[in-house]
Length: 270
Image 1 (cartoon, helix red, strand yellow):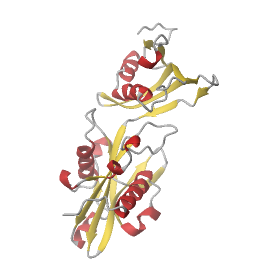
Image 2: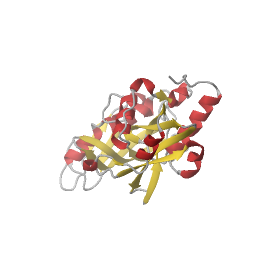
Image 3: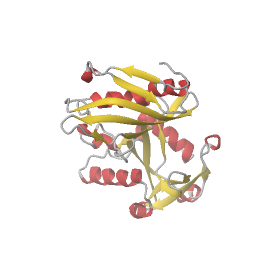
Image 4: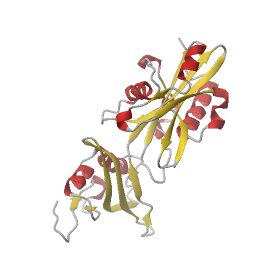
């Protein structure tokens, strides 16, 4: 990498599917050398490059080529890259045209559909918090990003519930809903394919509780304040869940849960 006052930071990489056609990685004006290095060395960027060349990747069959990536923004979560914004120039060889290439990279995440039975009724446990990108306060499933590269989806799911809801779930009681999908999906769901790489593992937890537990959860204030999480717990009857939230995670979890239940795929509750 090199830079002067008038020359942008650049880096060149070679991809196995594009031998002899190096890809230029360029920093947008204002991006520091440290930010640029963090971006191109991050697991988010490396995974995106890997996805391009996977069996079902954009570059796999040779019909398209990646020529340049413009790194536009980097948000650090402590010492790791949390969010990455870049623009990729990918050319369709048949038409010579670029395909849409604006990327907001945030990596894998998890969400948990918590269903609690009490006195013959099933309740879903949601969180309510301000979501600045939408400008709204939204009801949604407890969810969070994976904190490392180990891919511990179920462990992350349990930790997120403890942080956001304040209750402990046993690992062995978690059901991976996305594991019921066809292998071609990668056993993940993508809520915003046109602009974001986020892939979510959806989990299910079912339990029996006393009615006072439902009362105690309703309106409970939780979250990691040091991370800016100001969360309230909301409990709603499951039969009304699909009508009361615009959260894609919730609606996807309901769909998979109902289909898995219909086909008898869910394990028996202990």
